[in-house]
Length: 167
Image (cartoon, rainbow, N blue to C red; front, side, top):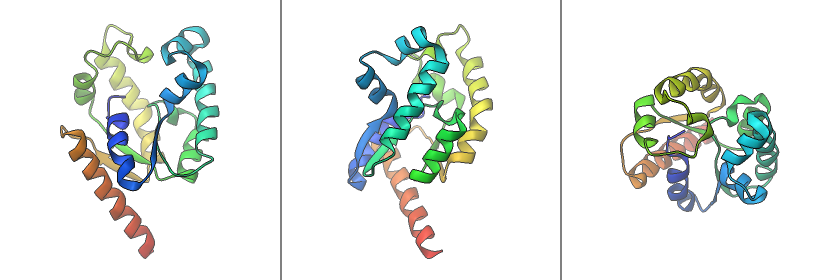
């Protein structure tokens, strides 16, 4: 959350000739309602079931750069799908960066709490090991422009692919 997945993904996809898909936005488009409303009506479990079904669907094809929601990795089946069907890049972000980037955000259901720092630290403690398990490569998020950050990620992906080819 707040790592820049959507912003960086939109800049990065054309560099690789890919279509960009944001999983949460695709869920909203197909359901016709906001993720926050799905959370409100169906709870997190209901949303996660929809998220898994959408992930299964969109990863069947090829030619996309996918930005998942931060909680997608909670489900072991999602982690397996991501690792098997794509190259997973973790945009590793500090809680301080998240707080700065999400300061005005009122849409994210998991941030509707009086102590955002505590919530983000809790989520990081739970999810960082899962991101590490799932990711083929990790790129530390930095306070760079989206274009500069996308260039950094593109360089790391190319290096990873070249290294993989040599093996």
